[in-house]
Every structure is written in C-alpha cells, then in structure tokens.
Image (cartoon, rainbow, N blue to C red; front, side, top):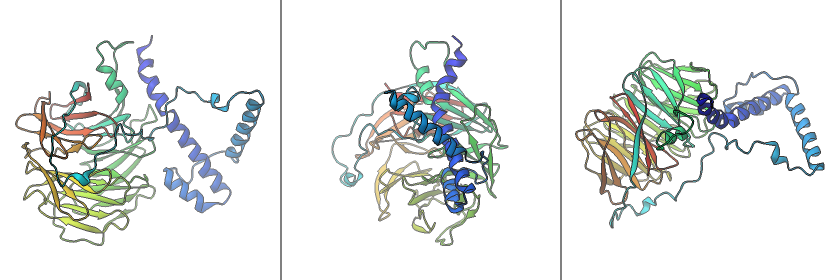
Length: 439
C-alpha cells in the first residue's frame, strides 16, 4: 500500500466538508449579488469570509438546487433514503466542536478552595516533529483536530492530531506516520502567535515582520498566504473573534489593533485609561466575544468591552513589577487566568477585578511561556524553567499535584492544551514539538 496515500487520505476527507461549505457560500453570495440583494450578499460575504466579487455561472445555485430536488424525488420514489447520497465516512465539518467529556468546573466554588485535590491523569509523550530553529508558539484548532506551530525559522507547520496519536501506538500500520500535513513559508521574521478561524479552514499568524498572514489549509499545494495585513508594529499576539469577522492584534504598540477581516480596516480604542508604553504580550477573546483581555509588558492585565473596545478594568501591577505574559478567560467568562515573569499564576474575578487564587511552585523569569487550563478547567498547567518540568495544579485548591520532566533539551517556550480532549503540546528552544496525551 502507498503510505503517502494513507497519510493524506484522512486529511483530505476531514477537509472535504470545509471545501464544500466554501463553495456553497460562494454560490450563495453570487446568487444574492446577481439578483440585486446587495445588502444580504454583503452580510453573507462578511460572515463567511467570502469575497463579495466571487465569480460563479449565472443561476448556478438554482440549477444545482433543481437537480438535487429531482434526484431526491427519484430516490424517494425508489425507496432509497436521501442520506445514502452522502459518504458516511466523511467526518463532520471543520469547526464543529464536539461536546466536552465533562462539564467544565464551577469556579463559583473557587472562593472556598478547600478540600482534597484531584489527581492529574498520567500522560505519555512523543517527539512528533521539529523546526530548524526555536519553536516559539503553538495553537489547536477549535475542534481539536489540528494544531499549528510557529518558529524562529519563519515557518509554520500544520499537524493532524489523529496522526500524532497514531505515532504513539506501539505498532503503527502501513508504514511511518507523518503528522505534519502542511508547511507554510511566507514570513520574513520569527513567528510570535497563531490562531484558527472558528469555522473556515483558515490559519492566521502574527510575526516580528509586522504582518498578519492568512493561510488556507484546505489547499494541499498552498505554501503562501492568500491575505496579508501589514501592521505598523511587531505583532506579538493574534486572536479571532468567535464570529470570524474580526481579529485582535497585540503588538509593541500599547493599544490593541482591531481589524475587520474583510476590509482590513484597523480600529483603535478611543477610551484609553492608564496605558503606559508597555507592549502587549498576549490578547485573547472571551468565548462569546463580548470581552477581550490583554497581558502587557508593563505588568497589567486589562479587560476590554468586545463591542466598543473600551477598557472596562485595569489590573495594574497584576504580577508586581514583572511582565504579564499571558491571560485568558474561563469558558463561562467569569474569571481570567494570568501568568507573569514574577513566577506566579493568578486567577482574577472579571466582575470585581479581585484576585481569587494564586498558584505557586514554578520559577519563570526568562521565557514568555503561558499558563493554561486543561480541557475541563479542573487543572492548570505551566512550565518551571530551572527544573525543566511541566507543573500541574488543581484549579480549585491551588495545590501543585504533579511535576513531570518536559523531555525537552532546555525549558519549553510554549505549552498549549487541546480545547476538546486530554492532550497538549510543548515546544521550545530545542526546536522540537512534543505531543502529550492521557494514557
């Protein structure tokens, strides 16, 4: 059996629905535009990231619908279910997020924080790929099926999670498994951050070359970006709005840059309070897009209104005089988890700005590594630089429950957890990418 076919067939099947949706969206936009429903065409184009001037044969959508109805009528007359017209082996479309394994933790109980801590399940790990220089960042897709890594060598790798799991099996069938399914080369300087579009097969990257680039990973031969935003500063962090219509860029500029992904128009907040000259290390939207949070080099954590971009709360000195390196919301948007170069991980109440919990037990003063929740928000993971360990805390009790050797040469630079399952990725100065999953 041709092992290259084995490696690519799964990806192409996974992306099949994504391509179909993009084609359908194009037909809808074209149909509305050609029939002078310009406002509706513009709305659909904006919501689906489809070019408003997309070309399609006149009345093509009507023609396909008519043919489909005719086939359905014929199948029904012969007693054949219409569901057999579709290949049941094709998985659900990209961006459809599976239900979590358990309900996320109730952080309203975090104030008490007493009781016995839970045990973090054992994990196994394997080196699954490497870059030619420092691996600087990583991100999982919203549905957990893909992950991407960015490097100081200016390349981006897209990996298929199912293939990473196959590599960890004792006896992989049909030859070697290659989890890297796409490579992108279009930046001139190191990659700082990545994010996946919430619905479409689009990956964005922010880099030191002051650009944000859009890559379509449904196209197997594409190596270059199909859209580019030229910013005025080093782009340190990027985050898609849950609608996919906007994105945030945290840069060396102290104010977040908000971009319309269709027009590339940039918006800056007019409500700026107590903003110093600190660059933004990380920016992340909440699950609904109603808020976003920034972690800055001036040590502050700031909460912003996701609609009008007003700063609604500044937590100055959130990590003392040290840089705040990461910040992200809990799923219910009631709390923010932050980390900094003061070696402390903090949990903040969004409504009051009150510090709810501190997580001790690591030393992080050099690298911009983040602290993250696991997929159920029962645990928090981060890196201890001196011991080169992955440290895990019980989120409710704040007790350190595990410390595992990272298996990297030198402390990992980045740790990212899957949003859908018990798996995470580490990468770092040794150029390697390691995949971890529960045993």
